View 1 (cartoon, rainbow, N blue to C red):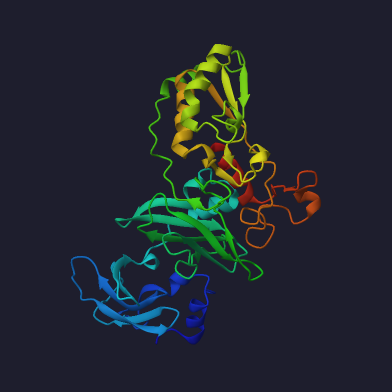
View 2: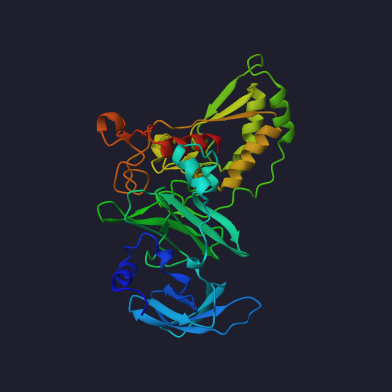
Length: 397
């Protein structure tokens, strides 16, 4: 065994802040070969198969701990190479996979620097779940800001909701944790599992999640918001030419869930809403539609004003594409769209933003600054650059 007892213990107890430093493939200290390690609970046998033109033979990893920690040395491989893990579980089933711990970070130092300054205006393309192709491998990267957490894992339907399988690495002093997991595809459900500041294990939804399960469930869903083909170019072009201070404005405000419901219990979906809403707005002579908050919210009677998913249109009425369709159709009909935005506060749900890493991260520690006494909600700490970045990028999103 090359690992020290302390290093081994930190891995199997999930207390190592940068597991990529130990897991994956690394050049040996004497430069004469490589060592590979994998943490695979439930595995009975693990082999490493190098990839590429070299056609190097597979080599075996020995089990170091019954938690599923394996290690092996290959003296005939002079440097780190791409590879697959061939994993046989205790039932004898075999699968091949690319090792998440063999990939470099998907965030750059510039990304983290701008986020720390509060100036990364497209942070929603960096944090959260991002579908990516890295070194020719498709999958999803996961990143979350939790500077006071002791450990962060991503759990989901792709790993049995098991926090042992994909612990993230901490990226320097940024407070951001990250991992790239091959083969995770759109539609995968996930949450972040944190060992928080106080050592308590908690499950949190993704602050940058762009699609969620329908309430009362609250898992985030990996999603691609770039699939929709917009056809509202003519509307955007004429909007840029118009002087808003000299143009007529007449706004029709509505709550999507309450407008022309199918029944007392069932609302119209985003797509179903488009045609009758356009007809009504045109008939009444309105120039704009103003939607009460559409961002994801667990408490329906809040009418959307207690947001739990700031980057996701609520899944109660359909997918993000369905909402894009609604906006696109309104624009094509010459109707402007205004969306209520709620940067003033957020609810105390223990699975969302509140005390995210065990500390007052998004909110103020002092309840005199950080709590709405009447509403029971928490106030954002606008003094933190990362919180300001979260909100400004959200407005742009």
